[in-house]
Length: 241
Length: 228
Image 1 (cartoon, rainbow over the protein chains, first blue to last red):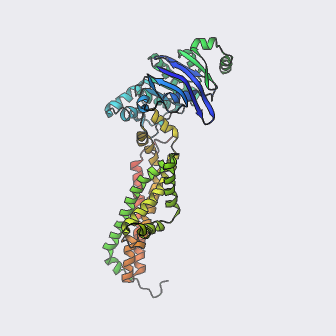
Image 2: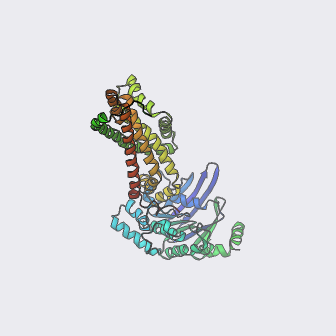
Image 3: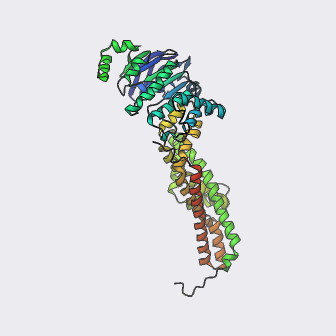
């Protein structure tokens, strides 16, 4: 379970998160939607401690992420993150990319690390690209590689940060399919996304985020059918037409 | 037009062992100061980039002084200057330390430039995976840094190899120092300096060839793994 309690985040005088509170239950798929530049991605980067916060608290499985003495490296082992720009490691092949975490974070023997990497690469449909470098893969394949790399750590949570935004329209689908598979497997997912179909059909809950805070949060169908706030319905009608 | 000058190569030929030993000393200083300087440079680059004044100010001072004053002055400072306030250094130590100091400054800027070529999101992805900062550097950043800084580093190595000739000024028996004393004994100045220049040329050519060979061995993925 991930609990955000009144989280505040500032870049200088710019307030990005203005007291954000919500809870991610184990096994659920939460989509965070909202206008660009509203601070959605920042929430994810705060959840695994990649970004510091200035107020409030984020608690993952009972551990306060930003508390002094919290071992972030240990915490991150169970929170996989996938970025908009893939961020695959260009000097490593697909299998080496995915084996890096198990090998160098968990300290698994090489053989075991490679095996774990191979299993995840096959799962995302890259079983025939094990020895390809990222530059030899398409954007969609690179993004699936990034997903496999995170999965090889066998995390409890997966954070998806606008993972289809940098892809050609034709490549979006394969990545969404992979995410959907994960959701069906019971993975706990928090996805910042502009893919309304994914938010509506795959997620259990949807949060509408605007101007530094959650405007409303609820079951996906409800938010799409009967948004409670005017700004939510304005955003939804704007994006769906 | 050499007029009445008659070349006599015999003294040079007879001095071959001394010359080759001098070349060995030059090469030894160049290799060791380059390795040590590069190791220091890595930390100087990180310190300068750290954004903490306690680290960046001294690192920046080192980089500024080493790059913006002649290497000869740096050797002088250690050989003659240091003696005024501390036990003086012998010629080998002062040349060795001065060239290390010089190399570290230049290499720090080469490394800093290389680090700028690697997107900060690579570090973020590595840390997000749970890698500690040193491991993120070791397994993700440095392997990408090496192809970027490789050829500038070979250049810097050549520069420091030629810089060892400054050892002559403080009486060090590196190649130029040996040449200088031999020609003053034999009066065959022209012959000795021609041969020594040729020796430097050959050494640099060998280094360049090794550099090109090394790039094929060390960087087989430099083209395959390039960033999109």
